[in-house]
Image (cartoon, rainbow, N blue to C red; front, side, top):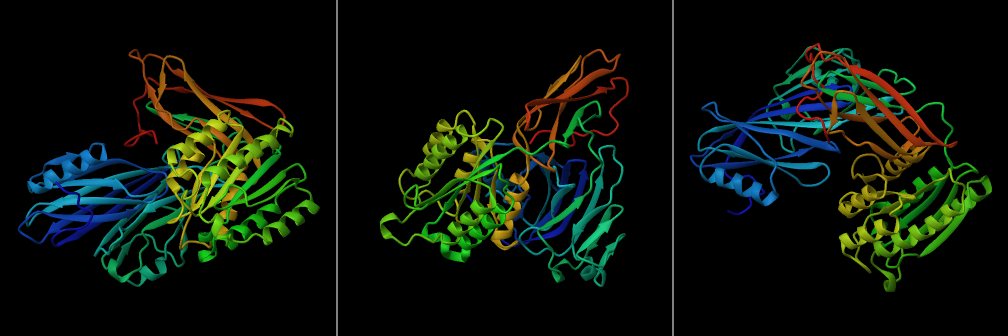
Amino acid sequence: PVNVNFSTGISVITQYAVNAKVRSRLATTTLTMSVRNGLNCSSIHMVTLQLPLNTRVSSLKTFSDDGCTTEGRVKEIEAARETFLEQSSQGLPSAYVEVQDSFTYSLQVSIPPMGETDVELIVEQLLQQRLGEVAFEIPMIPNEEVDKVKFDLSVEDVFGNLLDFDIDLDLEDLEESNVEADVKGNSTNTTFPKPINLHITDARQHNLPQVIRGRFKPNEVPRDGYLYTDGSCFEHFFLPTSIDPMPRNFFFLLDTSESMKYSNKLDNAKKALINFIDSLSPRDSLTIQTFAGKGTIDLWGVRPGTEEEKKDAKVFISKIKVVDDYRIWGTDLHEALLEALIRAQHDGEETQNDTVDVLVLISDAWASAGETDRAKIAKHVYDLNKDGSVKIFTLGFQGQADMTLLDAIALMNGGISAPILQGNEDFASQITLFLGSELGTILLSDVTVKITGEDVTVMGETKKMYPLLAEGYEVVIRGLIGLPHARDANAPIKAITTAATMDNIQNWEVSTVVDLDDPVKSSLCFQSYAH
């Protein structure tokens, strides 16, 4: 069989529903749709969905007219495609979901001749408190118009109590339309004290978003963290407070290849760097390296973050230009990263032990000069930084940068990778927000969390190591609890957080008990527990 990446035949989504539940630090969204075939032969309907970053598909099911239910399984991509196309050729209802990029998923639905296929897709997003609120994103409509949309959303705390929440949705526009709702607002940022239920019967008349963004204020997290279990799963939150910030040694690696002149990408990056420099203190240090077809074009630093040096750095940044020398066209990411890493490591060796060394790469390109093999570039960077002394953060302009490589470099070197999105806020604002929130005030480095229990087994935990933790950010860990065969006592479980601080290595410990006598009332597990 051949791969199909587009709709065949004539088919229509006759029903589309979104049921989203945000509970504590997990957003679970169930998307259901009915797709009907207008031809007397099998058809494939392709739906493109925009899902939030770091979303996990936890379940895919199809339902046929005769009442049969088929549950999806994770397979190698070619095997999954073959299975799907074979079922389609036999006139069977089936579905196949594939990741296109960090945000885009394609859902292909096979519909029997003159028949209908019902599909249920469940996606999950692990959430985190940032600067006093927990933000969430709910996929709403696919990348095509649908006739009717049913949308349900509730937000609860860890115990299932309803919480107030804000969402970015223009209910004033919907209010005068053919919309059934038990809650209505009058602005694009409406606070809801209870679940929202919308039934939009004329969805084509509205510019509905593909993703709805919302937020809520969580309950206060105790100093040593909060550990909750329902007897089946657990959640642990840790939000550091009353800790002096750590000095930072920043090394900015800025792409100045020719492509950076388009859409004012370089000008926006320069503006963001100038904004961020204002946050530096005399305890911080700064180096700036530009690159294009060779690893180093211009270099400034290393200098302390004093007022005089910050002024000089801003002058240097203002003079940075796109490289127009044909002899050094292209982008040598390999050489640039290794040269920057050598310099950052050397600078770090000459500073005090409590300093955090951070390298930030901003680029819009693929490796087109020097070494261009992704695997080799990532390996060479990791080999040079195997001790993890420099945390590498990467920012890439969506649609142009090689985000696969940038993601890998950040993941392998204790940092975070983020796309700079087209069509949202301007580029400078996105870069400024990322730098200010992720690296603005660093309280802890090399954070590790150990979850242990007596008479119980802890397994399947989510991320347990955080290279850096900035002020206002929390650690969130979820996992499963394996219960003993004898359920005649309460079993203690504890979370121990260890991290480097301005002063020394510190530990925080919090504990609770798994009540083995009471049945599970409301599981935190939902469809899955690990992301």
